[in-house]
Length: 350
Image (cartoon, rainbow, N blue to C red):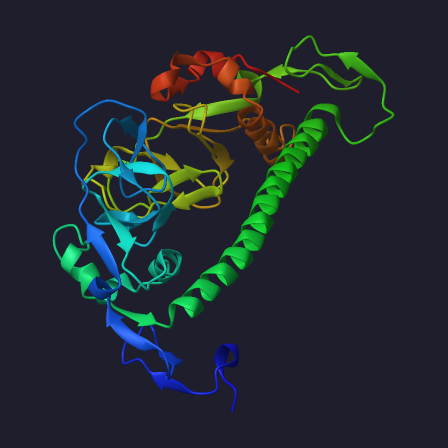
């Protein structure tokens, strides 16, 4: 019977993450296949790229090692992201570098490292990680060198095709995002009739608007509310570009804050992160709760005349098109580019 990849006979490797392997393959500890060495801090300046556990160099130095090599992480979130590197390099102590021993393909090792079950070997410390001993004592599936090379070549070809598709998909996604933003902008500022007579709005960001439209300042269409909860027990809400969502109170880095000092949000209220006009957002809440007292909560003063869902698109367009950003104040380099209440209330809307 023919099994995976055309092999006729398979056997259990005895290792859960590897599963079955062809009967003619061996299992060897990594220390008999590759040489794994520690990194260290460089001591001189130069042009050699320096790597940690990430896939990008973060500085340069004067010392160097000669590639090719595989860099594997020692601690943290990048453990499962090996990096194949050629040419001169240097690695600091957050990454081990791997070189092949005779009869073993480094490129094959790289692909193995992409699928290691690190939880099977990891050292449970304050910050879980991998030691040199952990890596050395891993058992690896070992076909012949010719078969290793063939597998690596096959994966190089297939992964290159997939990477190309991913790159094209990312480019297409950006195109679609821009298209979506332009459709929203045109609809909220020009309406739906392409043949309607237009007039100059007198507002730079709006440009021309339909003849029967007018402009109005925010303060005449919306009112800011600031009602402090005064007690605990409310759902804490976060403003994200995917909507207003309950805050995950189990996230690492959360501090025990007095959420009774947060401001109330009713379903239908706008919540706006006006403290960060670059990555912040504004949306309408579909639930009751509380949100940061630093955010801006407001509502339509006349929902029948100033329809909230239409203005949701208007306000979000002002984020997407960096219109609010142009009216902001603060220190942009520190992410503190905010829209003061006075400027917001006097901002002109269609």
